[in-house]
Image (cartoon, rainbow, N blue to C red; front, side, top):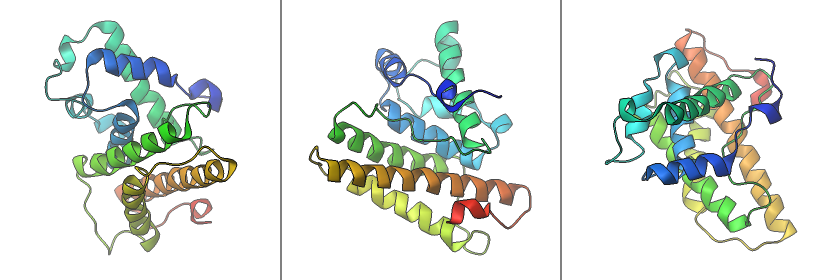
Amino acid sequence: MSQTHSQQRLDYIEYDNLLSHLDTDLGLSEAHGLLIGLLCVKPFHELDTYTWWRELGEDLPVWQDLDDDTQQQLALLIQRSYAELVDPLYSFTPFLPDDDDALNERTQALGEWCIGFIAGLGLGGYYVNPDALQNEVSEAINDISAIAKLASDSMEQSEEEERAFSEVLEYVRVAVLLIANALSSLQKGESSVDDRLLH
């Protein structure tokens, strides 16, 4: 697992085309957000791939009926996503269109990613327990919910808006790592998160 961040990142267009070909109801960013939400709640070895797959569309074939190549590609997406989420160097970032794509497209994708993430937390069995989670974590979840709604607003292609988008994306990235770290700590019976995520 000594791959660099660039090696770990998968090709957005390739996977976007794959999900389009499979005719999923969710786009790639929302599907990835859903996956990350699930991975925050459930340990990787307990994740039922079918639980994630069946949420991507009502009329999709069962996992076992997918051809081997498709199964391998989707399994790789899950494995790499998990590897980034637990990377001690915090290489995780939401799976969004490239920086060269239109700002509105990336903004919409970020909103969809956040919607998927919140849905994934719920699907994984997460429920708010104020006595067990730090205020920072509860606030992070609420903020991501709010960003999911605000990201539907159109943005002009300008340096200022690009900067604003980058700041929001970085906030979401760190917030997700904070949530994942906290829920992992709770699963281990611990009560603290990595201080590096609180600054």
